[in-house]
Image 1 (cartoon, protein in one colour):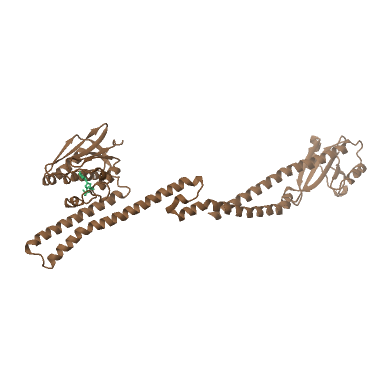
Image 2 (cartoon, rainbow, N blue to C red; image 1 turned 60 degrees about the vertical axis):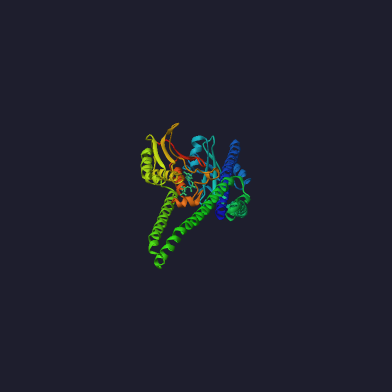
Amino acid sequence: MKKKIGIQMMCVVTLAILSTVILVMFAFYELFKKQVLEDLSINAHLLQAENALTVESLQRYSSNYDDLRITLIGPEGNVIYDSLVSCEEMDNHGDRPEFTEAVQNGEASIIRESDTIQKSSFYYAVCLENGNVLRLSREADSVVSVLLSVTPIILGIVVCLWILCAFLSRFLTDSLMKPIEQMANQLDHLDNVESYDELVPFIQLIKKQHEDIMKSVTMRQDFTANVSHELKTPLTAISGYSELIENGMAMEADVQRFAGEIHHSANRLLTLINDTIRLSELDSADKTDLMEEINLYAVAETCVNMLKISAENHQVSLSISGKPVLVMADKQMMEELVYNLCDNAIRYNNPGGYVAVTVGEINGEKYLKVRDTGIGIAKEHQERIFERFYRVDKSRSKSTGGTGLGLAIVKHIVAKCNARVDLNSEPGKGTEITVFFNEPRG
Ligand code: ADP
């Protein structure tokens, strides 16, 4: 980048100098041309003012000026006098543009390039009263030769400015790049980086992204550690019980119980793995493709029916009320959401308690509410229960088949469906979790 800026600056400087020099040269040359033609015209009019314009008087006049050529041409174009070449050597000038124009208009100014492009010939011709044409001319450097003559100076200036540019661009790019380089080296301490105003939003953005990345790395590490830890217990049980059976150390009567334990632990492993897979699926960016308009009441009713047996086992009554409402969501996600909420409401309930599921609409907002008369959640835990593997009572969660991931999955689904969740709970009285949905679009 430094090299690029340097080269670009040099190009700009070169272009600026060249265009300025060329434009100024042309402007001056125009003035110069005007001056030369005006000089010639003054001289011609001075001579014209003389009464009897003889060859002698012309010779006398031209002897005063080295670079002035005077030619007197007769009305037929025959050269009567020329201060440079003898008349005999000169051909008829009747077809020369300055002659014909002077005859026609009384006077004429013409510039002709010489054989070499280095010189230009300036002509001024005036028609005298006797029909002769007096022509004055002078040779001068052409614009090309003027340009060529100043070329070394221009090149010198360009080279000097190039060197200046190289230093300047280095200094500029160094001061521009310094905070960026510092940033790259100190991603963890971006506040210490000295920067300029224009860079502040960029630094803020990088800082935020860096923090997010670090947070997500830590979360992933924690999650992996937690998953491994959770897998360990059932695997240890499976390994232990199966070893006892393998070594014949299990009594006949114990074998069935051990097999039951193995079965139970294997089921735990399966649930845990299923929940983990589901979470990582929900984590991946675009899993919202299956959004459709679904009847929330019908979905909730299916889940309630599915959980009826589990509720009976926990001596909890489970009911659903409300009316059909349409929400924009993924059907499978909705089933998981209702299932997880109801499952928790049953598992963290007391014998004889009840779980009430309500689906409806309030203040134009559609909602699903799961209310239980269970153990409730203390204030200090309410914020955290949606975190992965966060459990208020670990042993109760595990003994009822919980993975600690249910509400984390609920939180993900709620976010994906553009909904929000409301928690109301009092220890010993019960819990009420409500999910509010936004209006379906379109
Ligand atoms: P788990 O698989 O342990 O139930 P969840 O993520 O579903 O995990 O819930 C996290 C924790 O929140 C639970 O361990 C439990 O302590 C608490 N919790 C969830 N739902 C309820 C409820 N309805 N009543 C009381 N506590 C609950």
